Amino acid sequence: MRRLLCFAAALLICVAHVSSQEKMKPPREFLLHADSPDFWKLIPEDAKLEVVAKGFGFTEGPVWDPAGFLYVSDEEQNKIYKVSLDGSKSELISLGDPDGNTYDAQHRLVDCASVLRAIIQISADGKYTVLTDRFEGKKFNSPNDVVLGPDGALYFTDPTLDLVAGEKQELEFQGVFRLDGSGKVTLLTKELSQPNGLAFSPDGKKFYVDDSKQRNIRVYDFQPDGTLANGRIFGEEPGGKGQGVPDGIKVDRDGNLYVTGPGGIWVWNSQGQHLGTILMPEQPANLAWGDADLHTLYITATTSVYKLKTQAQGFVPYLK
Image (tube, rainbow, N blue to C red):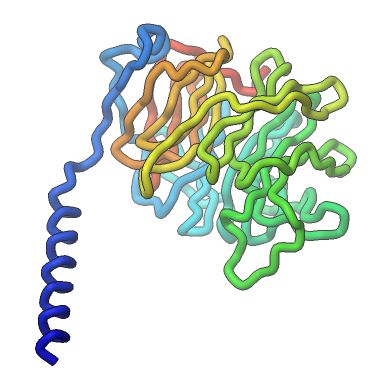
């Protein structure tokens, strides 16, 4: 009994110590860290991070509308919101675990609906249509992010990251897919462990996709028939537990990549050189270019939406 009491006392002391250490951790803050002088050509040294809106559960999938607002997914509140630049927000649709979004070539909102295990199209009045929810008769895992391709097709990732607890994985892999205008779904690759964010280079010749489990970014040569070739590692984003993983990807007009990852947003040039990191007060999951000049990054980071004015101009596939 004495040994048991001593063990219990030691355990309590250990827990108290860990709790005290957690409290002593300095709060995260906005910082700019350059690994190359080229970083400052993209992000001004005096850049200011601004809060657009807060009070969310977990923000994802920002989409900029030229009318001057954003669509933002909230994975915890199970809604997609229309977010105005004055911070106000209104519900577009209530939906189980909405994730990445994009506009298609006809300016229709497309969402990765994790609980539905589907790619859906959402009208301005909040009604949705399932575009696809299966490959070769088997349900998708939990579609995560989607982008409009240079050929007008939709490209999306399908990891198991948000597969509903208790539901069966029917596909034997986590894939990257192409959905064309006729509804045909094509598997592009199944070599990633947990494919997540994805983007095209401005010239449409390169396709990027990151892997949240392997903590890396892959690049492929995009073929005229919509397939991928010559897959290779573009960059690595290592980090510790709880620091964040590679997630959303956006590209600027010059081909530089902005990839959410450990601590914030990692900025890469098109040759795979890490230029620097935008350290964020909350862990970001995704981002979008916005404003009339497309010089502003809108960032979904945990409970908030932020914006950061840059010196780069964003590449937005649906605003060619």
